Length: 70
Image (cartoon, rainbow, N blue to C red):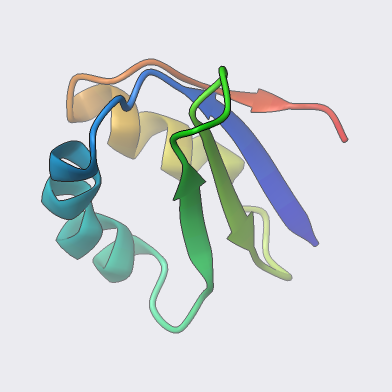
């Protein structure tokens, strides 16, 4: 399943800062940001339910994050 999140992450620098914590939370999962999208999309491929953890992690890092319905 692909989870899609709307975020307030704006810059590549922010993604680099989040990379270690996302990799810790989501070991061996594929994730990426689309900063060109107006919603600054984060996509995560996972067979497990990860939405609450991802939202909490980004909010604790100071970013807005909400799951978008697919």
